[in-house]
Amino acid sequence: MRLIVCALTMTLGAAAIAHGETQPLPIAPWDDASATQPDAPSAAPSAAQSTAQSGTLLAATGSPTGLADSAALRATVFGTPPQDMAPLPETVPLSEINIALPWANPVPAVYWFDRKLRVWFAAQKKPAPLAIVIAGTGGDGNTSKLSILRGALYGAGYHVLTMPSPTFPGFIVSTSSTGVSGDLMQDSRDLYAAIQQILAHLPHRVQITDIDVLGYSLGGANAAVVKSIDATTDKGKLHIHRAVMINPPVSLITSISRLDKLFAISIGSGDADIDRLYRQLYAELANLYRASGKVELDEGFLLAAAATVLKSDAEYSAAIALSFRLNLVDMFFAGDLYTGAGVVVDPRHPPRVGDSLENASRILRSMPFSDYFSRVFAPYYLKHRANSTSKSLIADNRLDIIGDALRDDGDYYAQTNSDDLILDKRELQWLMDTLGPRIVVYDHGGHLGNIGDRHQVADMLEMLAGRWNPPAP
Image (cartoon, helix red, strand yellow):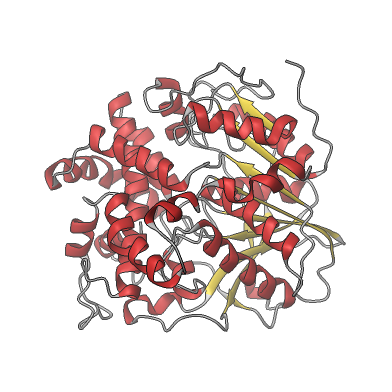
């Protein structure tokens, strides 16, 4: 969503999207008092009816219909109603950490503000387990959903480290070893290496008794792969104990393609269709941005605007599809720039600081993931991954790549919804068959629409503690 944010912040008169009210904290010294700020987890701004019923396992014959189901669309847009939210601490002591990573690629001029990886850390005052939480597609390390999960975890006694998605531009620039995001294993290797660096530099007063990893949406799949990498590595092993996937995809490419289909059906491919929806949301987005202390606009902002302005299921579908498409725009732009593919960036004349990116954004927002795959992703990996084919690249981006670990290791867990927009019936069944009693499938919730629900939080904490018992059918 970074290219769209550029236009929005210019309109609002913001000095630069990389500067906000928080003060960045270099990895040393840790004890800089200016680095600590309260983080107040907030509920979704809706009073809609709750759609998340905890502990109700989907029968094997159940069929998710998220792309057509009104309740799923509304849950995805509105999120958890305030009255159903789990109790959260009023404040969480939060430090922002900026760290330069030794393997980082040269930074393009237009990404000057992303030279360092930015993560957030909430430390307990006594020895405690660490929960590492990874954002979903396009999310930075301090999204509204991460704030909710951070509050729940910190309140339960965890140190909490929140990480951006490997598909977030700041991660691609500061941390990605390829510059081409979207490969499940490679992105997770980069995440794992970054986590190693961060934990190695934490001050001695932060005492960690255990390490768990979790994430939502794509971040859930990343979390599971990060745990599997740790289990098979010898150098700098972290001994990650448990992993919890919240609304994970089974196939990254199939899930994104499903959302591209939703985009085509609900919005269309013409500039006029996209501009019409964006104009509907623009004023409310601006108001939300002015009222927030956040630096990045994440999908929470766009969907919050949609919940306020839009009224019909067709409009909700369009807003959901647009939020994912804008994240793809950022991935596409960065990949084009790093690989020199020449889709919207002239490799001989890359954009400089101050150059307008409006035309690039306009072109890319009409291009589906299949274009990113065929013009950036596949050409890069076919060249750099021995014996790969387009078919193998698609297969490599399924959770099947760690299927044995998910089946055999009792420390992998998942939470999802029967009407999740990014899963079809077969994929949901695969998760249930693979994880057995270590998955809970809620009756409703759409995609991430029940994060923070009191039952979702209680189940998540039971899973992390190894005390999870599935409810009786």
